[in-house]
Image (cartoon, rainbow, N blue to C red; front, top):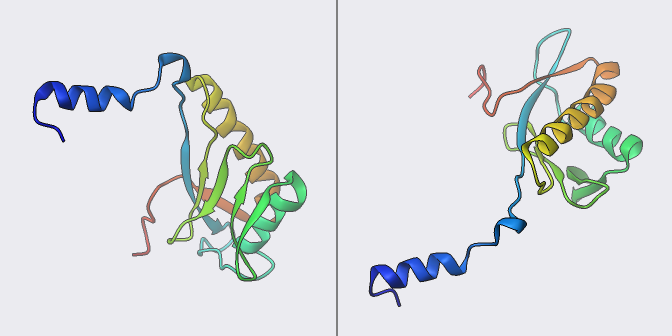
Length: 136
């Protein structure tokens, strides 16, 4: 039980990691859209969220996270990051715990290269926002 300021400080300090173990993790959200019509990308079909996720699985060896027969996310080949499909249809990269901001920049850069390799041939673009500016 916390009964004093010192008790509170002690409780918080117990949960702190040493500076040598501090890490930075990136979360990068983006909305997929069809580049020719600017419409939202459906889950099923030739130009779809499923096709994007399957592209990551097949080309870059990400491990699928399934809900029944549906891919709803992917685990990075390293096992330290993931891509999740958010409720609004956006993709979210949850990056690996990395040591420096420069490492996170490189991780996002590499991720976006993979995204373009899969999405461009499908005619899918991405809007790098955490919310949909058009749909509610």
